[in-house]
Amino acid sequence: MAEPIRCLIVDDELAAHYVLENYIGRVDRLVLAGQCYNALDAINFLHREPVDLLFLDINMPELSGLELLGALSHIPKTILTTAYTEFALQSYDYGVTDYLVKPIQFPRFLKAVDKVLNLAAPAGGLASAPTAGPKPPSDSIVVKVDAEWVRVRFDELLYAQSWGNYVKLFLPGRMLLTPLTTSELESRLPADQFIRIHKSYIIALNKIERLSGNTLYIGETELPVGITFRRELTERLHHS
Image (tube, rainbow, N blue to C red; front, side, top):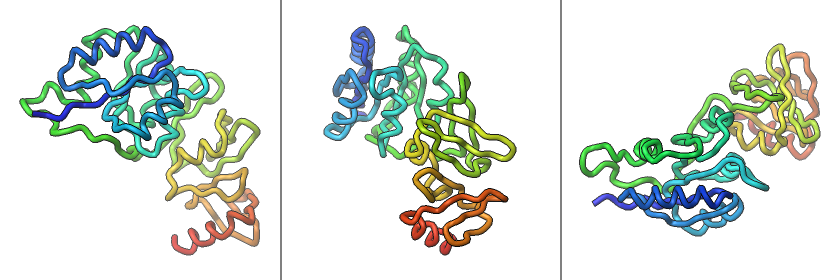
């Protein structure tokens, strides 16, 4: 018999908990492991208990569902449950399995669960669901620019500069301003391709033209290298 799949509901709306708890109870493979009403409680729960499948709302106070995913080093299989369709594209940067729009109908719920559990497969299905897994590889991120979401490919990003509560992303021939902190951006970039060279700058390693003293050149642009970041930078350049 296949192992039960432990589910966690994370949503600040009581009505959503009622619906999802009911739906989970109607599927034999699913077991409700816990319910959280904000992302911080969910983080604490995930540190204590094994969870195979996360039903996660996006729009929550203090910390959004996507910010929760960004804060986790390992993410359970995730089905987003939200009333806001505009986050669909960005959500797939986090490897979510499906995106359910409220009010959620049971047939659509089953379709999303089937993607995770393979319920429609022949007897046996999945031997077990992984309790957690690393973020899937990606060649880009999606960021908010004004009222739009824009996909930025890693191979096009030259460098990023902190700008208050925003970050400037410099690409060939254009600059994008997005409401992220430098630390948030750094956590979303692949560490083997990008490095922080200053408290205000992150650069693409393969875009460096030269390093002279405490100044780094990307094309004709001069960027400062912070003293505390110089050693790691020189080591990375030496081994590249």
